[in-house]
Image (cartoon, helix red, strand yellow):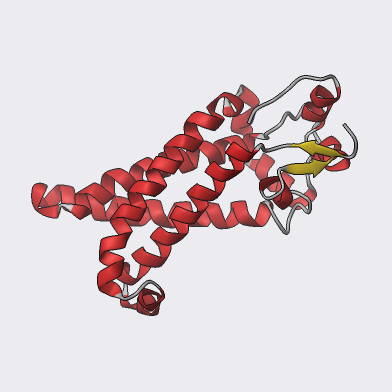
Length: 208
């Protein structure tokens, strides 16, 4: 095994970065449409008219890649009763002190809940986005709900992704390379995901 452990295989990394890329395109093309405050972003993509064409198609690709991620990771992200504790004080303890749980597997409860939040958020953006794409096809009440759902879902998802980026980089050194090179050090695995590390040592394979 050596000092490096494969954490994310190539397919997992391609799917992950596809979701990230299409979400970024959605942000850059959607914010100038949302408010003039971000109008300067339109110039990055060729103007506001380009953003209006690009945004819905990028949204469809974001949803498609999110579906691929959901299917690919679902087996590894099944929730156990203890994972729901990450919705409360457990996540605060983790962020402040770094929790060491000897029975922690490949993914902790926070990562699993984030996975389902992104999947649900992508569905919410798709449904509301279709209403905004063809507003004449829906009654006024549905259009109002669609606008509200699209805005709220985007804000919550963007905040969650910012936190996810922080935790996957500056907060936990050594984590980011698991999504670039696909590997982590044995010391990182032993410290952050002890049960997963023990399973690897014992020869039990885990995907993705």
